[in-house]
Amino acid sequence: MTEQSAATPSLSEQEQVRHEKRARLLAEGVPPYPIEVPRTHSAAAVHAAWGHLTAGEETTDVVSVSGRVVFIRNTGKLCFATIQDGFTQADSGIRLQVMLSLAEIGQERLDAWKADIDLGDFVSVTGTVISSRRGELSVLATAWQLASKALRPLPTLHKELGEETRVRQRYADLVARPEARDMVRLRALVTRSIRETLHSEGYLELETPVLQLVHGGAAARPFGTHLNAFDIDMTLRIALELFLKRAMVGGADRVYELGRIFRNEGIDSSHSAEFTMLEAYQAWGDQKSIAAITQKVIVEAADAALGTRVIQSPAGEINLDGEWAWKPVYPTLSEAVGEEITPQTDVAVLRLIAVAHGVAHDPGWTAQKLVMELFGEIVEPHLLQPTFVCDYPPIAQPLARQHRDNPDLIEAWDLIVGGVERATGFSELIDPVIQRERLVAQSLKAAAGDLEAMQLDEDFLAALEFGAPPMGGLGLGLDRLMMLFTGAGIRETILFPLLKPQG
Image (cartoon, rainbow, N blue to C red):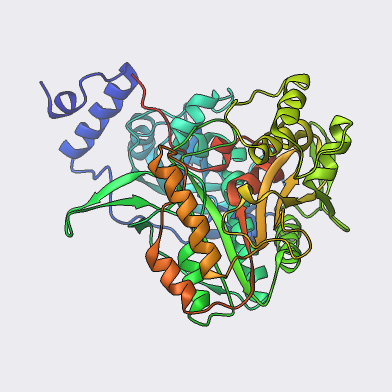
């Protein structure tokens, strides 16, 4: 049994052929993975400098280009191949034709090309820049070298990859589909735009701990882990909030973080166990001022990534331009169900409304919880245009400030666009006494078995007791913003999504 077959016992016929080629090349003294190969120009640079050539026009300009072979046609005395360059900020991977003729490289190197090179291999080709008879910009080879031997075949480039294959073998997806490459480039543009917008507004970018002793900042079930060095249990963060607020206590005026967070919850077309969140905090701000910066972040990201503020969705056209609506929870829900609902509405009445509208509910839910569920099921899916849903019951955000005009509400909003929550923001609670009361209530829920309730974080409360300025805060899901911009599911917007193991 050969070394290759021992290491990889279930090779396909094509994989076996490629392994044998690798072994033969090594035996012949040809490195299948050389450290360096000639490269003077990218494919994009060749197109930029010689794209003006007319059909059949030749030059004496010599270049060395390299890339992955994505098309190959080997005929008698003239071989054609298309190499694909890596994708960049500027392009999605430029392709360039190379031509290998008997007259230019001789019989030995032409035969070697036919024998050694397969689709998917990386090669370096040196030669003169010409335009073929059909007008295709090409490099007519005078020399070539294998740069990297691919031991697995490429996916069939003219057939659509299935969704499961796309997300499980993203590397193959990126090679095969320009749409996959464009998603990566678009996300990079959006991320860069967010940073530039916040930088222009005077925000400092911070990094906060992923490993935490106490999980908090959101109602979510955490992932647990163990720190061997201290022999203590820890969790992965479920939010960025509490450490960013510590920085605000320390005197930072405006801060943000673009960070990965982890929630041990359901996974579906709009939820992932790990995802990217933007959180930002603004001293001397409130829910209105932080809503303004949220709108600016999203609009400028659309300008940068899409070049338009109008998005086509299955539900209709979404216009990000102009003023964004504000809709209070109780009056908007009242209008939708045809009867008045207030913070004083009895829970029994709310249960009857839930039954009448087919909204599943738990008999043990409080009135506030029922209001949240009714709104989420009856109203939220129909909010197509950007809408700040505001004036929530206190249960919605334990870290939000009581409403300045109505003690039964809090100063918090959820941004709904296209029927989906994209961001949340509020006037931050900075009273350490009230914050302690709310966190104690959360910790009692956790003790009673609520896996999503926050725990009592004494260190955070100690920081808050040190004194924090009035502030507004926001949380924006980057993955859901990408879903809005592209219409794709969350598994497509995340480059390498968490997947259930096969088999």
